[in-house]
Image (cartoon, rainbow, N blue to C red; front, side, top):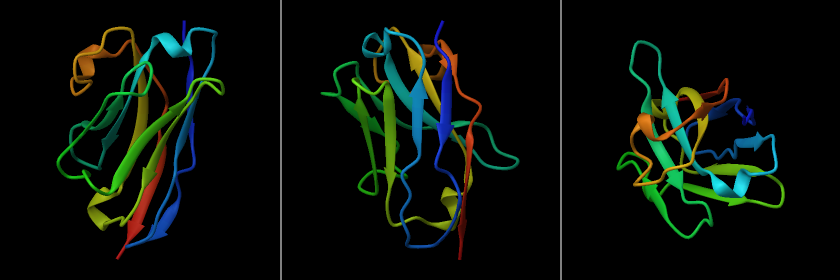
Length: 124
């Protein structure tokens, strides 16, 4: 079992930056690929970014490519999402997820565990 706890979401002005983090319980964090997803009010949850077990491979949604960076620190059981040049349309609850299998990490079906989410609000 893996438990995931996100933190770091808050209200920020457009153009600003945030770095939410997600801490995983357990000793096998390095065996899991990790992903970030988001869900805006009235919309379905969508893929944001993913990272492989070692951190060598990453994928991004087109909407965040060049602005967001996903990274992980396996010694700290933590995955980060550096969010730069934030836009009001980035407003959503951001979820991290962990999965043993990794293709691109774009599909929610690749993940076995989910966190409760952290709210990111970007004001214009």
